[in-house]
Image (cartoon, rainbow, N blue to C red; front, side, top):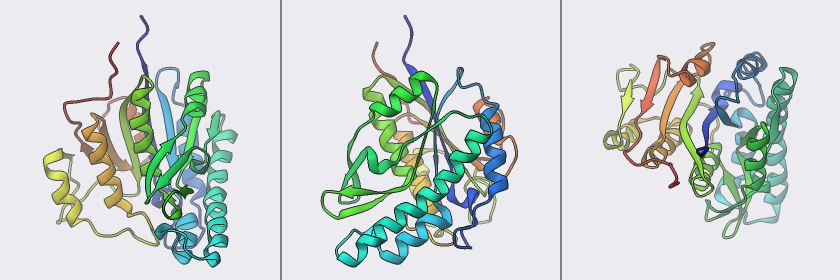
Amino acid sequence: MVGPMEVVLVKLGGSLITDKRQRETARNEVIGRLARELAEIDRREVRLILGHGSGSFGHVAAARHGIHQGVETTEQLLGVTETQDRAATLHRLVMGALWKNGVAAFSLAPSSFLVSAGGAPADLWIESLLNALQIGLLPLVYGDVVMDRELGASIASTETVLLTLAERLKSRGVVVRRSIWLGETDGIYDDQGATIGELGAESISDVVEELEGAAGTDVTGGMRHRLETAASLAALGVESCIANGLEPGVLGRILEDGAFKGTRVRAAASDLRTET
């Protein structure tokens, strides 16, 4: 009997693929190198769901128009359009790099499959993503403006999208084996600036409280939001690896269970296995 489909979630952080201190400045060399590394991964052996942040593109527009707090005025409507356009502009750069390097990716805008309520995901349509995985495509998601039943519209961060997908994938017989978060730091730092090698659920909340805000403009919380998401995934039985994507080859090494400099967030005892 064939077991359930298994996937790994990967996020390329906005701080990794853009310079968040300079408006709409993509790190094209980094994006290209990561695309080449993804092309070398045998996705017949490991299926991936890839996400990327909006960095200095979508976050700047969202902050200027207050979209992350909901839409209350007609003046904000063009802000929704601008935020989506800027986020999609970076998305097209990532898609283009994957295509040029022979990676068959499939773009999935969260606005087309997710609805929120009060800023939290309320409903999710997953059929297209599952079909893409099954035929060998690499689903690619990103942070986006989505319709919101209470706020009119709100921001669905890439972390939120990936966590919500992990929760829904379980009900469809898919096992999430691991999540990999690539930024521009060697994982999570302690108060002395040293990398925390491993974290468990019992210590995550203390570390979150010590984390500073994101560098540059970020309407979703930066590393703090990433670690909170890793904690939620840990409760689902999914280990997270937080590493420095500026280091060539780190993604491949993590997928091969090799050593890497960064932070592992241990999974809880329960997991996302389905009963068979």
